[in-house]
Image (cartoon, rainbow, N blue to C red; front, side, top):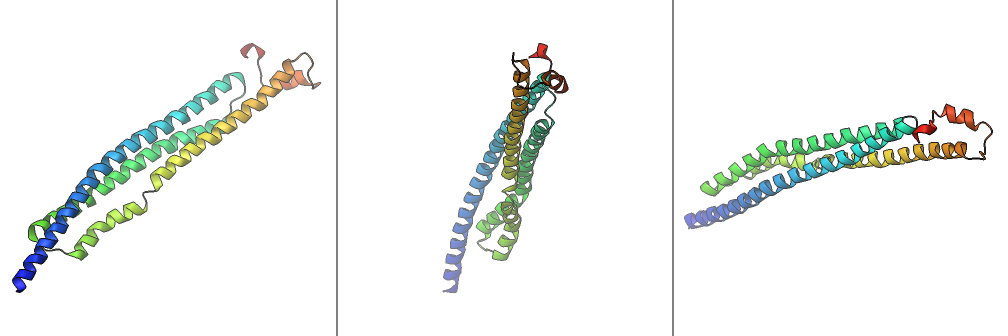
Length: 193
């Protein structure tokens, strides 16, 4: 009688192990592909927009003085984009070994029919810890995007302020009496406009 119950229990444990193996294998292949694709697209997109902003700041510098705050923000955005990609890759590499150990454990359970819950929990702890901090790479990406938007606003304000002063100074009836001195103080060159 006890042999029959032990045999039924071992069969049930093997079914659970088979289910866990299938689930972990699907997760491993899907998560790896998804992380790589997300890392590539996120990093490339953030690098592109922040690099475009930096080039726009350099273009503005040809006509007016260099927009330092905007250029700094775009530079920070580029660094954060790279950091985001590195963080995603780091998370993926840190998850690979614990996931493989957990798969090996469940394959052993499938063969033996004996489950050690404490061992399974111990093997899953690194994955649970990584999952707890999985918000970090996307958050870094959001900060990179934020740096771009704030840099774009700073660049726009810089150009708008300088542009209005130049237009006023070049008009036939400037509103300011010191427009020529202001024009020179702003380092504007009408031949470059």
